[in-house]
Each structure stands twice: as C-alpha cells, then as structure tokens.
Length: 413
Length: 208
Image (cartoon, chains in turn brown, green):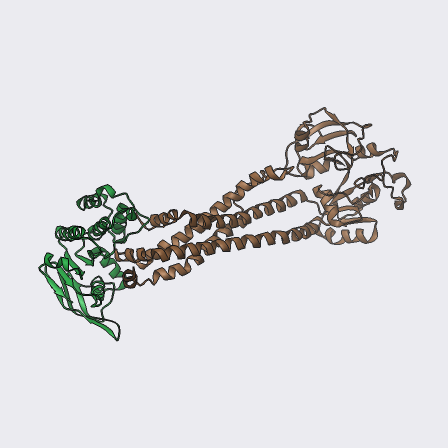
C-alpha cells in the first residue's frame, strides 16, 4: 500500500463523482481534439490539392467559387472562357505552364473533366491499369469513380448533362474506359478525366436543345465579345497556371483582371480567406469545449473538496502514523491529476473513435477514416491544459491539506 | 524511557494547563485519570508531539521530541509512537489489512503482511482482515485500532479514552490487549481516561 495506490483507491471508491469529472474532461478534450483533427485534415486536403497551382483563370464571378470549382471540384464553375484567349497566357514569359480544364458533364455524380495529361502529372496520378487517353472520348477514371461505379477497363458509359445526377444523358457520345488511376488522396480520385476535345465533341456541333435549362452547364454560352469568329465554340471552363517566379503572382493576376474579360484568382489567397471564414465557427466550438473543460476542472475541485471534508480525519490519522505534509499533498494532488490526465487521454481516444463512427451517421461520401489517427502537434497542448486544470482544481484542497491542524481535527472527530 | 518536565500549554490566556512531570522506566505503564476539561487530550497530544508545549520538554529514549523540526517529528512519531483514540478511525476506503500496511508504509517500515496477520490473529480479527472498517462492530474496530497502533513496534503507546464508549466486556478486552501488546513490544503504555473502571488495572496512576 502506498500513496499512489491510495489515491487510486479513493477515486474508485466514489465512482459517481469520479465518472462525472472524467466524463466532463473527456468530452471537453474530445471535442477539441476532434475539431483539431478535422481542421487539420481540411487544411491538409486544401494544401494537398493546391499543389503548385499559382493562379486560376476563368470566367468573371466569385474568385472563391472559381477556386472551389476548378481546384477542389466542390462548387459550380463561374462560366466559360475562350480557349484561345486563355492560351494567350502561355506567351507571357513569367508563365511556367498552363493546364486547361473543361467540365459541365458528369456520370453518376462524378465530374467529367476535359484536360491534358499534365493534369494527371500535377497530382502525381499513377495508372493502376490501362493508359492515359489518346483520342477523344477515351476516359481515365479516378480510383473512387472506378470502385463506386464498378467500372473496368473497356467499359463504356454516357455522360449526363450538369454536375448532379439526373441531367440529360448525352447518349449520342459514348465514353470508353482506357485507364484507371491508383488512389492518390487528391481530387483525382473522384474525377473522370478525358481530353478537352471530348468535351467539345460531346457538345458540338450545337443543337441547343438543352440550353438554358441548367445553370450548371456553361459550354453553350457563346461569348460574342471575343471576336474570334472561328474559335467562339472552343470554350473551356478554366485554366490552371503556374509561374516561373513569384513576380508573376504580383503582376499577372492584376493585369488579367483589369485588362481582359477573364478573371484571375490566386488559390493561396482565396484559401486563406476561406479558412478564416471557417475558423470563426471552429473557434466558437473550441470556446464551448474549453468551457466544458473548465467545468470539468470545477467538478474535480468540488469532488476533491467534498471528499476532503469527509476525509479530514483520515488525513490527520495518516499524519499521526508518520505521513509528512508532502505525502498528504501528493495524495490529494494525484487524485486531481489522475482525473484530468485520464480524462484528457480518454478525450483523445474518443475523438479517434468519433472519426470512425461519424461517417456511419453523417452519410459522408468520402470516409473520414483515411485521416491518420496519430497525435497531431496541435493536440499536444491539450495535455498541459489538462495538467493545469488538474493542478488548479487541486490547489485549494492542497492548501487545506498542507495546513491541516492535526490536534484540532483529531479532537473534533 | 520516558521523561517529561515542567510541561505547560495554553490555548489562550484564560486556558493554561500545567502538567505533572512523568518519569517511566523500561516497561512501565501509566494511567492518567481526570475529568473532562482538565486537559487530558491536550496532554496526550503534547506527548505525541502533535501540540507544542509552551515550556518544558518531553524526552523519549533520549530524544527531546518537542525540539524536533516538524518534518523530523512526523518521522519520529510515525516510527516510535502508536496512538489509540476514543473513537477508532481508519482510512475507510481501505480494508483492515490495507490500513495496517499503509501505517507501515507511512512510518517508513518495510511491508510485513505476515506480522500484520499475526497481530490480527492475536486480537481475534484474523477472519476480518479483508473487510472494510465500517463493516466491523465498535469493539472490533477498537481492537483493530490497537493493531494499527502497535504494528510498527513503537516505544510509546498513547491511548486517549480507549474504553469510554465500550461496554464492560469490551472494556476489559481492550485494556488486556493494550497491556499485552505493550509488554510484547516492550513499550510504555499511557492511557488517559475518565473511565473509573480502569483504576484497578494499573498500579501507576496519576490524576490530573
């Protein structure tokens, strides 16, 4: 029998108090830990998919929408732009490379993107089987697309109009699967890739029979203002641009926005804006979680204080048996620290369990269970926080324990 | 041996106690009788080093205990003085045997479960070793508290009203036990009480 075992025994002897304090600490820490994990994952996903894209050029509209639709494929595109006009960018000596993107069709909810092989390279996509497209209407599937739709090499499918399920089916043009990509943990996984000409082919020559009935779809808008008669139909949705030097970042976006009909958006800037917007919500929940942790500290304090009131005589008795002041302080302190540290550990574990359980209830298309469950560095401050809470909750009981008046306590028992 | 001299203590100016000098030689016991309010408990707490006398000294086997630092005193008390109180008290979350082991740990004695069990056997509680204190009857609890006081072989056993809440049979058992245990560990036994039943049990008696 020693002090540590006695602390432990005291905790297990009042299971209700102990459970309450532990639960509060567990939930407080658990919520913060879960938020940190999700936040971290979102930021990492955002960064991962950003790759080396310095600038996105598309139709005028919201710059954030342009980034979300062209880089992350989570929003509708802003409109179409002339391929030729966008291609002018390649003449600028500050531009390293450009990748055109054309989309507006989907298959079972998965976006069909017309682009070049550079796009696959940008995300370091690796072919699992087959090869990249060579001719129009040859399609390469992201890993999730192939898996969800059970598509194999050589299978065929028809694109449907718009980015959600249920649009008009382009059944006059059949896509042919020539390649399937390995999972890359990037947007590629959820895209169907083909060349830009495929998109043009599916939508031209125009019959205009489905124009205007779908705002998501922009390949049929004829931008007369470009003035290039022969190329008015050669539209793309956007163009991803990388610069040779940071100077490009300073000069080119402004020049485009001021002098052309195109819109240039800088992803890193827009993402910062987005994260700041999201950050407000995260901070609010964080505040709530911190309040829960503080309440757990209060609960630890109350349970220590009450049990100490009842056990005052025990402490005096142990002092008579030869215990030093510091041993008794250790006894009380350990009870507080056990509660807070174990609560914090439970919280970390609970947040991991929540990551696995949440997708079952939230019907998430892409599971959260790809998130690594190791400790992230932002979580490390939760332990000092728990420690400080445990220490401050034990503070008053410790002072009382240290200053206990043995003869008086024994006489009053 | 135990020796006290000119021990004086005051809680405030109106309540000052002057205690008689005591001198006990090897193996000698002492019964201190007194009515309530004459400072019985105060005296025993001074003897135990729990209260500091205003003047005088207490010498146990050549250690002047009122001159020790608070830390050394905790240590000295744990090693050399066993106390029995009017109402037995334990660490209630621990079983009887665990209470005994804890007292050994706190007094820096090596763990000795065998001796603890022997002692419980001697006081007739061997079969209750694993029970919590509040599962025992009052007489049993008082016996267990004697085990707690004598387990570490102290030089001085101090008992404050150990029998006043017990019936005659239990009273007799407790006194016999205390005397036996004091004799077996060669300790001084000092009982402070107003319980007149004990008067004939001791030949060395003083009245406060």
